[in-house]
Amino acid sequence: MIMPLTTTRISPDWPCQVKTPGSYDWERSAAKWLRELVPARYGSYPALIRHPVLLARHAQIQVQQEIRVARTALQTARADLPRLGLPESVIEHTIKLYAAELLQLQHIARSVRAVTDALVERNNSGR
Image (tube, rainbow, N blue to C red; front, side, top):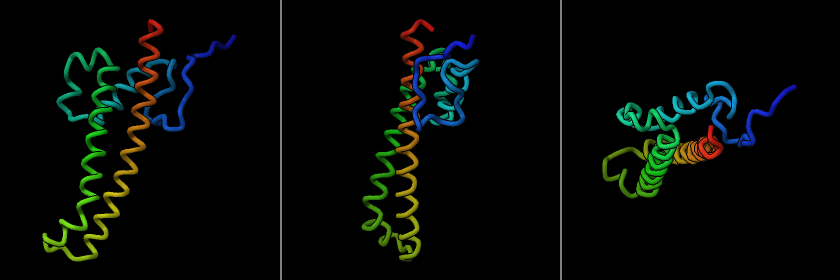
């Protein structure tokens, strides 16, 4: 008899680096992936190691801050970069880079939300 592993539905944004919720060692794979999203010093704090949902919360905040930074960089590039003496081709390339980074960060934010939801569900179900 095959038992369902979890009631969590896997989001299309679920990161491929994280095992399916309910599978063996999935929380460890989630924590490992989340640690890659935060500054290294946060990944070593005992509370964040013991409670992956706290690590997920911090990763959400971290990624949202990175989104704000990328948005600001994108919105100000056209005005600020010419004053730095950069050629137009470099400015255009940089604007495209910021736009692509913003899309990537938004995808990561959705992935972090999916992992956080699964961790919260696991905590609320008593493991």
